[in-house]
Length: 530
Figure 1 (cartoon, rainbow, N blue to C red):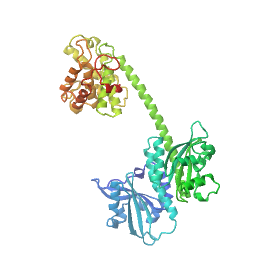
Figure 2: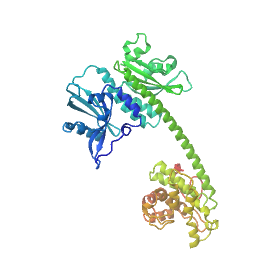
Figure 3: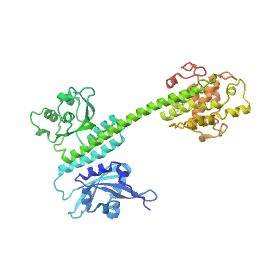
Figure 4: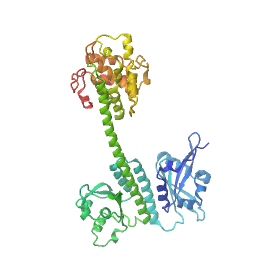
């Protein structure tokens, strides 16, 4: 039983209309294929999921006759010719290969079709070129192949860029290294200086002297020369397909020829009503930018403008999230402080949070997990607000009945924060911070991995802070005794890795907590975490 055919968007992403329209302008046949698997997940064939107009003409079939069909269904002999082996290798290794197949296209003389097979997303992209009986159009074909390589690389960059700098740097690098162009450059007007030009990114065979020579570094929009400056100035696409054909008096001609530039295109990047920048692409080959290639790059420029807008929106959202996180952190601190009415436990939650963060750093936990542990530790005893104050401050050992009242505070804490949608498992950590690995804890008697990582960190921090702080019924223990208790119960009550990290960090420390609160000691190296 075969798996279902995948839709085109699963192979080449969401920009299906753009992808189809661009590839349909290319004179070379282009195909996108997807692996077809059996019920065990093994690849048994590759089926056609897309063919541009030239590809359909090459096959002599309509879309209905070709798309969804497997390679071996249409061309059984291709198994023996090694085609399937080539497809499988490229799909597995992502290393491009050429595959040449002798055949006769309908209505054409016999010839050999040279396929360039490339891994593309979750499928294959094939570009073929008729080697026998081919007539003319070498320049157009070279441009089309160069454009196709560029399209694939730039599409990946647009999807994966995390910020403006990465987008422009990767775009320029792709144009040079994948597209095969000599030089790519993104320039923008200088902020607050209507005459200035700033280079955001460039890649290729130029140095800083080129920018000096075209006056881009000083009064670029006033005195600057060349296609990119002109695109910024006029907001119009600039095309130079033969630098040598420019008038002898053209100031950019000599600079370009000194750098072996023979063709160039510059496209303004428009954001709303203003020019946000210009993309310049330069080639050593005259005629590199025919109308079809220029149209393709105009599509690129539009996609760059869209991608830039999305990145700016993402940066704005991230800034808003940071502000929201700061507000949430302040609110958490205020809520925690409002419940610390007992002078003996005042600051306890804050102290536990600081130790827990220190342990999280020592355990090399990621920043998001660490932040969640910090918030949970700051609130871990919030449920004690339901426990009578006379029990919390009792200067003697609690009775069994009184201890049962204390044991309700983890669940009470969860109930108090139930309406807050934290982005971390805060409620779970609060509920489980008195559990123990051997099942001797409360409220549920959980064991081992049933206890969350956050709770396992907080329980060790809680014990260290509590033992080294004075209580109405006992004085503070010294640090060595507290660490010995944690070490003794490592693997029984406490996670051995976390207990070991705690003992390693705090053994031998003789300095009081840096913020002046009484109770326990911090390593000097850990102070930066607080």
